[in-house]
Image (cartoon, rainbow, N blue to C red; front, top):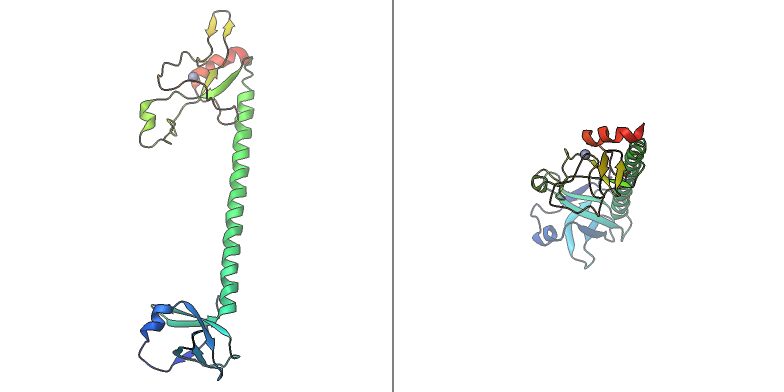
Length: 204
Ligand SMILES: [Zn+2]
């Protein structure tokens, strides 16, 4: 907390030019108690405890407290400390976010690798126009989006056939996307139940 300096008003009337200038620094005059702007223009406040001539004092105005005075050096230290604390907090939050993201990716990777699919694939979604409206992330995804296995090469396994671009659960009949920008297997876990069922023939 900032240590406030006690003062007395030398006039009841509040000088509008002082009001218009706050917050600002004023300076202790020769007598140790009078205060003036750098220009020499006097302020109608006087310190109860004298300070060394020339000491910078921060003058501010609070609706409840009225004028407030503190050492400008204290104020600077206070602001620096606030900034330091805020930066530290932001940095800690960023670190935490990175850790969480790494954990999420690791989880997806473990899950997807366990499917043991013997062909090139990625994770992808079926884009629906409804996904492009409210409650979506604006890119066709929404919180309830199902992640499919996007097959990236032809599969022929007995009667099981998929072409490149198909989902493992079947043809992608949505019209709104190509399949050039599939997600990596770190980015999302496959959540389509039909894809997971179809994956079982490879997993075993
Ligand atoms: Zn699917």
